[in-house]
Image 1 (tube, rainbow, N blue to C red):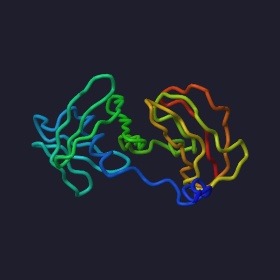
Image 2: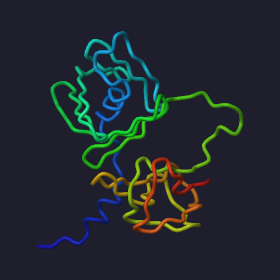
Image 3: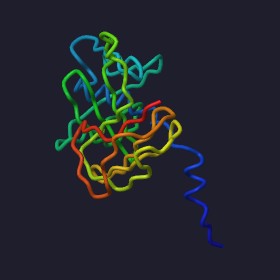
Image 4: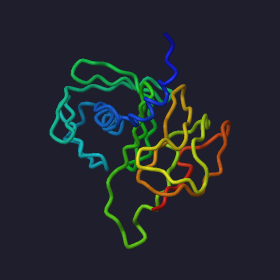
Length: 191
């Protein structure tokens, strides 16, 4: 028996959030070690991370941890004995992009807003350099939070770019096959 409704059912379920191992792995990538010389701490927009004595803690959960640089933007992170390979890009103290098995996370360091212009304008940036595979919307389309706007292929992984809030699509000038660079503005969703 064939089933032709799989894609519709999967899209109706929405895009799941990132797995819980991505933020501790991003913290380890930023620190570069599971055993820093002193306690290491960073507050990301997704939560606070601490690393000390071979352990990483994120918002009250703690794992035994190790990290090894594999070169070419890849690391191997072991959390509570489970080792996984991640693709990673670190930009100073500002942001860590990390991905594995089709899941990705942009872990930005939390900063205090400066002035009225510091509020988010709804613009979405490329989490990694790559190629646009699919574009699901057009300028002027109404979208709901979580709707997939476009899909980018990066390092043999597909990254779904989703609407952070309900609103109207603006500034979309991409087509399948277009190349995008790291942090390139892709599209905006405005209320």
